[in-house]
Structure formats: C-alpha cells, structure tokens
Image (cartoon, rainbow, N blue to C red; front, top):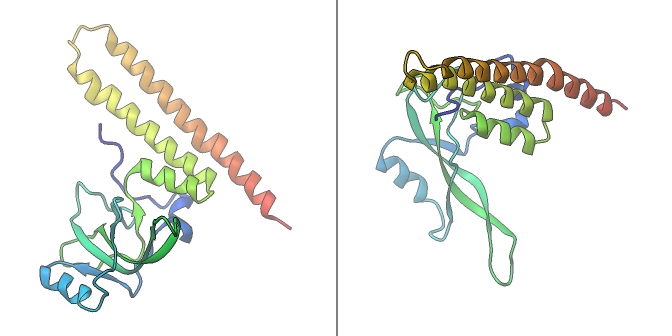
Length: 198
C-alpha cells in the first residue's frame, strides 16, 4: 500500500515551522546532468563522504504522482563518521536528495517538506511538534480508510458480507482520525502553547 504522496497543505502547522523542512539555500544545487555533478565535486576534497537523503520532499501541493523529480546536491551537509578512536565525529559531506518541482525546468522550491505521511509524522515527532505529528497520523488513518474501503473491498465478491465489515473499519479509522486532528492534537497544541508562556 502506498501511503502518502502529497506535501503538506496549508492547514497543517507542520508545514509552517522552519524546523520541519529542509530549506534550499545557496549551497543546494540542482543536478540535471553529469556535467552539473562534475562541476560540484571538482571543488571538493576527494575524501568528502557522500550521503543520501531518502525522503522525497516538495513544496506544499506537489505530489510524486503528478510532478517531476529533480536530483539536488547540498554541499553544506554533514555526517557522523565512526571509528575506533572517534565514534561520533561529524564531518562535512556531500548530500544527494530528491525534490519535486512544478515542471521539469522549474527551480527547486525553497520549502522542502516530506511528501510521505509516515516521514512527515516521524520528523514532526522528532522535532518535538507533537500536535503536528498527530495531524500527520490523522492523515495516515484517512489514507488507510480510503485504501480499505476502495482498493481492498474491490477484490471482494459483489455479494460478500465483508463489504459491510470493510466499511465499518473505514468508518472507525475516519472517526479516530477526526479525534486526533480536532480533539487530541488541538488539546496538545493548546497545552504546549501554555507551557511556553513565561
């Protein structure tokens, strides 16, 4: 099952917080040809580690199903190099990644949010944004509900009594999703805002 395939929409505060996306600064470049990559690495130390960001990111409203990917490279990234003498030493690295763009010739967007809902939820929780993580979890449940009642039920015989069971499960998931978004997430947001006040 494919969960998630759209960058955050405007209603989610996760998409508005700077610590929840990777910005595209002066050190990030689009790599469209081998020559582009060669130009980047020509100025780097040959021992520079190469890393990869596995999370596909894009501006709000872009999705992998409808918008093209471009390869990007960030020359200001860092990575943890482990050795017997220095188990947690950070060093400069070259990071490759993927960004969604509106069309093949468009510049890469400044805002880069995870398109996958699971990644979005995990990064929100890792950043301490519990309410935004819950909203992403709510979106995941909605996606699962749609998968169950549509793609899942489509394989059942037309007269199968399980059509009703599938619909009941989807309804329960939508109810939990609504509770997460409008109940628990809203309560957590208020609680955390109150805790931040001096």
